[in-house]
Image (cartoon, rainbow, N blue to C red):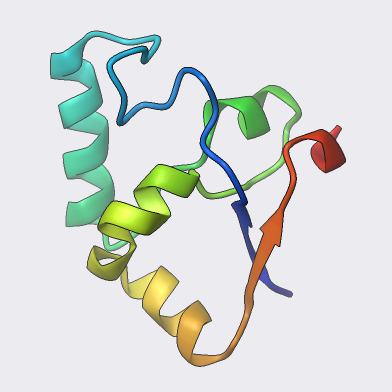
Length: 86
C-alpha cells in the first residue's frame, strides 16, 4: 500500500497565506507532525474521509517525517490528483 500525496497544493493549504486556520494553529499542527515523525493529511482529503499527504508539506517538510522517508525508500509514494479522491 502506497503513501498517497497530492500532485498539487490546494487553494487553502495549511502552509500558505490562504490557510483556513490562524497562523498560530497552523504552526502547532506542523510542529506536531514534525515531533511525531508523521505528516500532515490535506484537509480536502479528510473531508472525503481519506488519507492523502499535503503536497506542500511533502515538498517542504517531508524530509522531517520518518514515515515519508520510509515510504520513499520503499518506492511507495503515489502522487494522486485531488479530483481522483472523491
